[in-house]
Length: 110
Image (cartoon, rainbow, N blue to C red; front, side, top):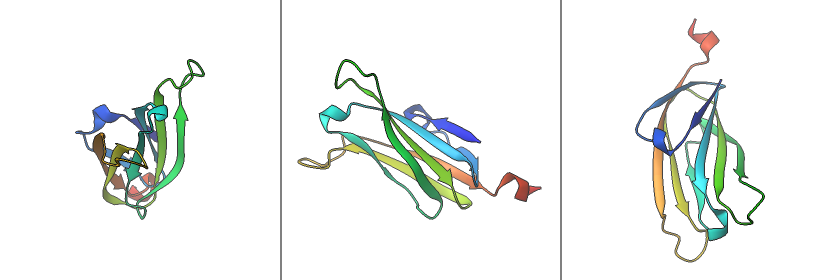
């Protein structure tokens, strides 16, 4: 199973099972130098993909940062995101978090 999460999902806890994927889509304009950076429990989640999806023109147009996480171990965890530059003033311009409840694999629950 794969769930898709956006910034609007920040205040609603989400449930996934071990082996499921959670795709997080965040609006981003990388030409500004500000990119979404994830902070997460690497024992519970694995980042399997990090890509930018946007139009080919006009050059530099905004789009979505797409981060795909796979649930590895059951328990409660938080996915935290900061939008910041890697250089200069590195304070985040935007932040948000998503609470995930990772449940045991569905076949193990029966």
